[in-house]
Length: 265
Image 1 (cartoon, helix red, strand yellow):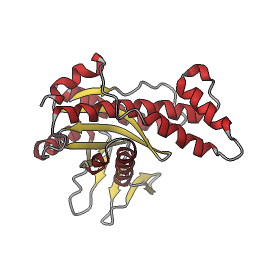
Image 2 (cartoon, helix red, strand yellow):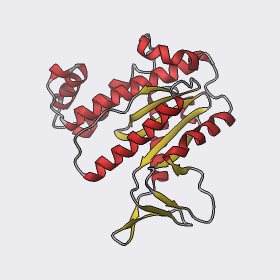
Image 3 (cartoon, one colour):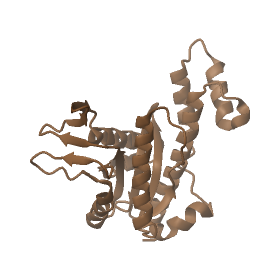
Image 4 (cartoon, helix red, strand yellow):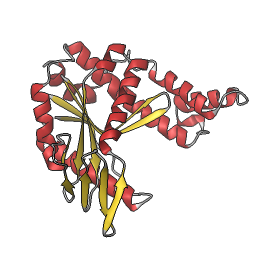
């Protein structure tokens, strides 16, 4: 498993929950690096942001293999979480229980955004790519499962084995070297563009000196302020940023070197 995008280091957090979430991602990224750094059958993007129609999917870990994609959500759990028969999630809180959003549904939404991005900006056929979803519960947490199996949920140290199982039985979907290269090149470009777009959205009037995207955003946002909302301008910028990404094939050795074995499988 070659790591194409490392988890960005962070030292400042708005809340203790943000820090705990980052530590869970860090733990999962460590397992990926430790167990699969030399495995060329799959590629990993940590902290992969993807946009479609203004909706942002923040994917903790995106796995690419010849049979499809795997979305992994890292969930920080310091105590115990329970999954009910109705697939509702609760966590231990101050001696009682507190409801929490389902990480599985969160993964499914991220997969939908990714497929919509493919449909809008890449090849429409890519929207049919198989995408599996997994939830990685941090090592210190305890998971209480319902009476039936929930194979998509496991402790972080068990996730690599689940990924290997999925890869082993998946029929080839990215069939040839050129399609694998185009898929990975597109994801590399699309994730990088999303990072830039998110930064611009935080500061809508970023000076043009910060890059061509900043200048384009500035021009779109201020060109017709009476009829164009910030959200509409942001979508225009999204389309402009992603339009050339599908046509781009990487020539960067930083990208090509770890991809070569994967592309030539």
